[in-house]
Image (cartoon, rainbow, N blue to C red):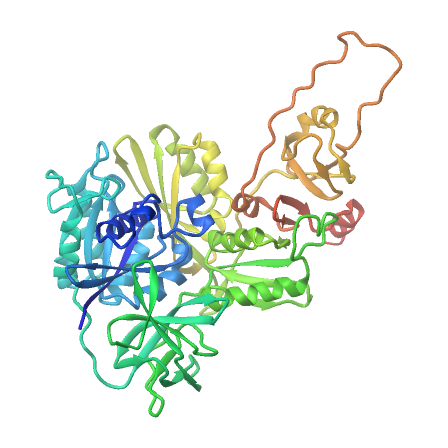
Length: 600
């Protein structure tokens, strides 16, 4: 029988987790020589590579000293908590990766609290000790304090620590003594992470993940909690609500290296993939055919934000996308629900729109960006936080926000946070930067990142995570400026944009096609202004010598998808197509908007 270790790697965004997994894969030599050139092997989705963040949890296994180590790479961002909660159920221990300069960050705390609550044993890896002005000893103390504040047990607090640089490919027990390989880390995994206990009896597998193949359909992935699973075995599938379905395991796969291998049977403690189980959801249990005993289903945190998704009905609909109907939108959202645990979709009165609930703007924008790349066209409303009534009082989601910023900008950050009902908790110096911590309503964070980067010349590093619901804090003024709205459909002329440049800043280029009701800029004042930028310069029969003043055009502001979602007001939408992101008014005609304003 092969010995097994199941570990999950947790870390804050960009602390080097996926790079470390690359080095473990190379060191254990599971890739052939000609495949050795690439990096960030597990971030195989385009979005993950571009943003440098892990979004989907992945499994990979390496063999070291005849022990199979199943490595589960987890997302580091709290918006993808649904992914984290699932995969930690498969692990027996965690590698907590911390940057030797930045130390513990709010997202690390989020994932670590989940891991400690499940009773997993941590190994701390202090990474990037090759960076200048790093502080490994202080960071080690910080991790201990963090675990203590998260009510870790004595066994969890006596964690082993390994120091090193994943990028340079070495790990050591002492950061001052670099080595030339990562054996120190692999040895501590084998020494300190407990192997799964052999658990005989009737089979039990909690489905914690899924894969999809166009040949065999949906594949259930989970850890075998008890007993053994065989190919061709009849099993019972126990759903979350307690109902039981009889089904069969047609094929059984084990994880080997980066792929999967077909096997006849697997025993408790290993992570398996089962083909042929029909109608399963994440959190269901596969158990014995005759006397099924289900495991506790996975508890998932509730969503804190909602957005309205609707089909694209702008004048430019169908020009760029392949999937534009409400049926396409409905099918795609239902498909996403199968694997995205923290997502909820509710129908509305209209057949063309749905309310989608998620963990945060990033969680929902990744879904929108993925759909856009698949050829969908859709429109999305302003993100709304979800209020709850607790003991008869209206409550809203509250977040903890950390900001690192150069000293000269710290006053602006404090002022910006306090305008949005933020309460400062701590302010301390870290090297040449100031570290600020706030408790702030989720509403206040929407749209704040763009303003904060502008106010701090791009220097602020901002992270936040959801804590709890607290009583409603009162109204917040989010955006003070109105919009510049196009009066006519047509081509925008440089001449008109230049003449109107004193009215505000523009979001469009000259010669760009625009439509009536599109938001083409930001007004310098608080109210909306409808302008016509489709008027060309009239020609006269007089020859002008030097009387035409030179046109000065300022570079238009470009919005990323998240920035656009955070920027729009309640009467505006973001139109997302495979090639464009446009902002528009819900009512495109000016007289409709005026009538609505009168009646409201």
